[in-house]
Length: 344
Image (cartoon, rainbow, N blue to C red; front, side, top):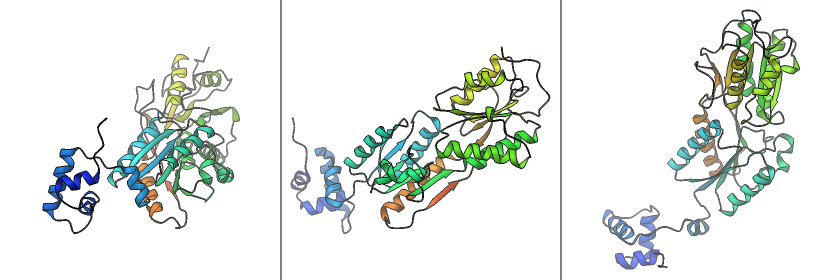
């Protein structure tokens, strides 16, 4: 096996000091154009590659950030991670990525992996939040951390989406169209996302003087769950829903599929609103009405906040909110009375 090229080898070949090579490679001051060109030419010819880990140990930085999301296959998180990586790369950082799949054990493994690689900071969407956050793996970590989409109980910088306001907007719009039987599918009832969506759903009903039928609030354990079975069960009720709100992933796709299999049209018989980006929604031929937030901007914001935290570890913790908005498509229509068709 050939020996790796060292800074000493580059210096000897270029006929300059090791310090001169280091200044060129590290972007130091007082480096002439002639010296820079000479050193870089040798670096390219010898195939020198910097030992980032050794440099990190020497300088106390690694220029590496760890990022943990629950599920990278979720299009919301894949878009978020893409924006995070792009922003961090522009600031000279590389990204280590891991999916926790909602497992605390997996989160512990990823945290050890990140810290074992000497990351400068971590971006995470942990499964332990609220008052219990301090007891979880990331709550105990001393590494600069930004929590995305979860409640860090004021112990870490946090960026979250206004899920409550988004759900409230969706329900208010459907109520304005005359709908009174509105189904809500959402995951993570024990986590901030689900809790806030249900709260917004209830607030909109209360403001309209309407009681909530608890059967219409459907908890979903995984974004991969298509909701078809639950939607079929709702359609068999004596007073089934005339509208559905669900995350714009396979959840909503499953609900729409069940409605179509029951002979119902969208939006004629069932109005539908998606929560989040619509890239992964199946069984929809119409432009969807959605509660949208800028996922890419969220990723950039989280990255910028982490870089600030790395530079100022003792600064007060901040909580920032990404606003959501209702964007009208063609998947909602005024309530026109109960359809004669029903699920079998």
